[in-house]
Image (cartoon, rainbow, N blue to C red; front, side, top):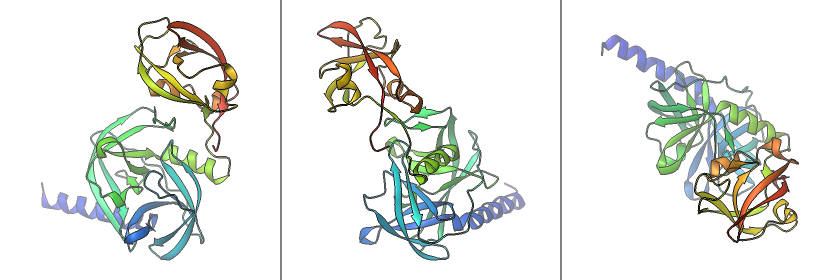
Length: 295
């Protein structure tokens, strides 16, 4: 590489990190450990829900000093935890960034003293919206090819123009994924106003199982009802433990993604036909989707 081009790239990356350094915060955990958070706006920070211990308050170190943060809400379906600082930072919501497959991305983290760390890598893949296994809608699938320490999870991922593409998190097998800016914005809005993120609820514990070809089961798989919540939608509809759900409104749900896609906010209060295998015979029952408790 031409030394001048290398210098320009190096300086540009360092400038981006310096400009974004006030956005990273170190959440103090026990035994001297810490976790990165991203300052989303003024007194609100976001962190990885799966990595944040179950506590109500945490000490936080920012670039300009120490603070206390109280947990406002947690959304495990999108892996976002929202915390409120006891003092504002004066920062606005960061401008959204755009990552493209094959481009470069910077993933920022925080040292224990809130100094910024940086990981550079290639954007391995950018795909369409998808559903997490817990039913959260993630507005784009973004996977980064870079190495990141455990304490750096929850920091901002930057594009080449310094925009924030979203918050980093660890996916299956340690893959580094990005929860997109639009997803973070939506969840922050829901958690900060106290309404939470609304999702549909069947009121049943489900276990994926293989099923013989039968009626609307087009995938050879379904979901066996292991138990039903007292007074929940499944119990009210007459669904029983041992029933195997194979379709909702005529659409096969052999995979978790297909099932949770039927349980978005718009499904709440909607009556749907659920096809189940009971004693080897296909039956259709009507169920009114409820709202997930605690959402």
